[in-house]
Image 1 (cartoon, one colour):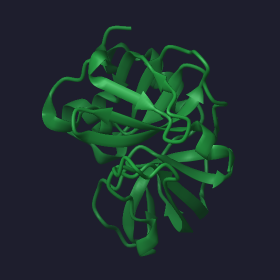
Image 2: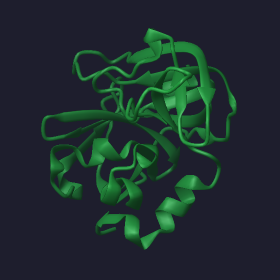
Image 3: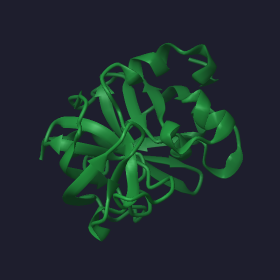
Image 4: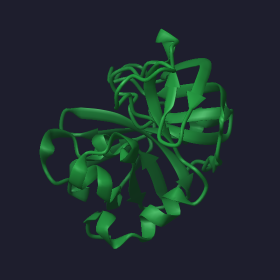
Length: 195
């Protein structure tokens, strides 16, 4: 599956999450993956590795959505890592999605699990979240920050598992419309560590 080539395990101390290459030097993930533990993240604290090839990348910059950092808005649970662009997998295309069948994927916290965890199910969308009432669509430990996909190479959201349940089920992630990550990349208020 094409998306597995682009998904990495992100480790900071004992915290583990997932992320997806969306550009040759940019990994999209959840803000809470980057700011776990309540301490200001530093580039040197992260280990980014592909679970199958064991290729690693050095983190050179961190950005977290300002609304997540200040007010802990669950719909702003978005972050980016900039990495040294050496021998990177092909990035996934990012697009908008209105609801239907999605696949969630992530790398569970178990370091021996190199295949990852995936499930497909019907989701409902509003402006802030993707929801599902399918228990298989819940985000397992370590899979936060992994992609929500409309097909094998199209990313439409980030699995977060954050937020309150609504009339359409429990929240599984936040949408990533086209241009959202570019805006985050250029927002000076999102800068956490130097680039």
